[in-house]
Image (cartoon, rainbow, N blue to C red):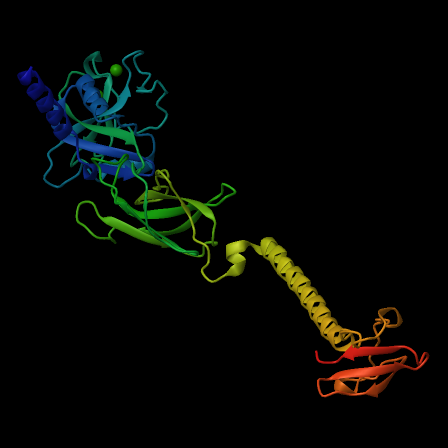
Length: 377
Ligand SMILES: [Ca+2]
Ligand SMILES: [Ca+2]
């Protein structure tokens, strides 16, 4: 059991280590090319080798590609040799096809080729030769020959497997950080030269918030990148995502996992905290309550003043004089028109004053009616 696990791990490690590194692949437009001058394989094994790399033998169907590849197979010290490419006439003699079955239309053949020498040459290779008429041109060769090879695969754009983290947030900005792209943890092909930070608003639209170069940030193999998104709206929800960008045109990879944030409410802003409509209602309520309170104060004040005035103007009648017939003594409430001890009561006439402030009044209309008014209030 243990031995089996060890063998499995060793096989995995061998498989990983046999993969060419990212910088061994040369990029042209949306394709990557690997020039292998060490394997020396027959045509079928060469294609199998490319498949292990997620590639195929190269499709060379333009002057641009042909010239590009030629620059990588022509070191001055390199002896004459030929590199397998993905072109053959194994099905019908003389009808060359690419590995995907499409007909070969581009003419990259060297002089006097293809010649199907010995009627046994069905697989094409690309010459590295000091002969300028042959260098970079094709030749049909025996498929069993052990030659070098050129693999080709599409550019796999870099992608981040983990999303950004929020480091700081306010009402108008968000600071996010993320781990830089590295081959063993993230997807696609490097090298990554920069990152773009995107912002998704409430309406679902993604907006580019800016970008930074990959050599910025802290750390060695895996740097900690940081970026500040500014100009945000207070109290709004946003999604934030980061994409890694390869060098060259069209090198931007897909957006990575996103993180959702909500900007804080603007501190000190009543509008921000409550909203305009709520604030209008609150101000209306405060105004209404103030008016109601003012009316209550006025009513209370008036009542108090009236009560005080009533106390002044309506002194209590105290008692009838001793021996006076109660029937003849009418306790009427006079209405004062004066103030203090000088009250003058309508319908009454003062007859005498006493030191205890009990005053006697004589009815003006009826001299038999005498009333006593207590002014000691
Ligand atoms: Ca042939
Ligand atoms: Ca030939």
